[in-house]
Amino acid sequence: MARVVLDKIKKCYGDVEVIRELNLEIRDEEFMVLVGPSGCGKSTALRMIAGLEEITAGEISIGDRVVNDVPPKDRDIAMVFQSYALYPHMSVRENMDFGLRIKKMPREEIDRRVANASRILGIESYLDRKPRQLSGGQRQRVAVGRAIVRDPSVYLFDEPLSNLDAKLRVQMRAEITGLQRRLKTTTVYVTHDQIEAMTMGHRIAVLNDGDLQQVGTPLELYDTPANLFVARFIGTPPMNFLRGAVGADGGSVTGNGFELDLGEANRDMAAGMAGRDVQVGIRPEYLRDTPREGSGPTAPLRLKIELVETLGHEVLVHGHLGEDMVVAKVDPHRRPEIDTEIELQLELDKLQLFDAVSEQRLNRGERP
Ligand SMILES: Nc1ncnc2c1ncn2[C@@H]1O[C@H](COP(=O)(O)OP(=O)(O)OP(=O)(O)O)[C@@H](O)[C@H]1O
Ligand SMILES: [Mg+2]
Image 1 (cartoon, rainbow, N blue to C red):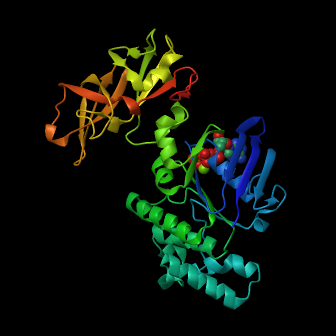
Image 2 (image 1 turned 180 degrees about the vertical axis):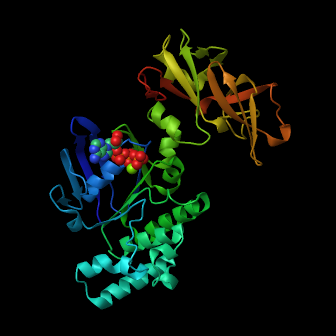
Image 3 (image 1 turned 135 degrees about the vertical axis):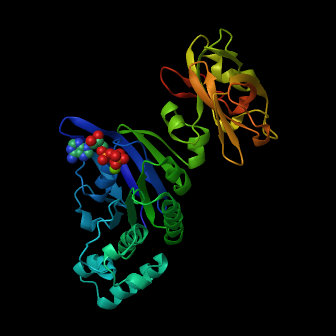
């Protein structure tokens, strides 16, 4: 077991800086997800932890040891790649025990570990097959098995599920989280999929363009995103944003085609922002035709319905408020119709305000 600390990590390829200054602590036994759009530096960060990529500046520790100069094989980590990287000419068993044979581990210990890992993963019955005789999901399990037999201090996963179909992905997601819960091994898991991040991670680190945006539990990121980037990235359907300017008294936001009274709940937050441009953020579940049971005060907003999505247990309606398209949840029995107007209620104590210039979220009770 070990914690992993990235201290002021920087990575350049030639003149191009792809990771600026990354500070991140992954706690012992923690499942940390690194998430962000393509090209933001997730794989680079993971490969630096693995020792597969040189670090331009900064220090990486695994356990109590600075590993900057420790070769990958001596870092006590096991990595699982998106491509699985199985040896095609070797059987499943040989793929799994290859690393242990290289280390000259005694045969009985190797057999014990392979038996244990294949039991955990349910792959005992095809240990003698070649990778090409397996389905994608089975191959993925072998790749995970090969990591488990090494009994490392840290698991590193780089998008291990992206080659699987949607259903298998959901199943393997549950298997990997279950596995980590039992083994309790510190894990760093890279994905670009925010649903994987939300459902798997103890904590999530959001990266954008080589910069760490926020680290927190899934709910912290969902409820209190640090900035517009995180607010947009986390959640489906995504958070709604209304662009407007705060009124002179700090009590309302006016945009093109709407005016919103911010109410008592948000007065503090907007007080220092009078006359400034903001984006009002509101998640679709807090913008409804009838407020949720037990919700706080609401403000009305009228929306002309441009699109209706019926999902069974709920119905989403889309339409423009000013320049911005918004999504609201409405009662499925109401059968909302395109081109009609609907009055929505916005839950004022769930509203978020973002400074349109700095893109940072304004905290309740704290003046900018
Ligand atoms: N060997 C290299 N030389 C130059 N630039 C590189 C090299 N490897 C990666 N990069 C650049 O570094 C940036 C980060 O790449 P990285 O592979 O870490 O992204 P990622 O977040 O894993 O993306 P994806 O989700 O597409 O896998 C990208 O802009 C990429 O083009
Ligand atoms: Mg990558």
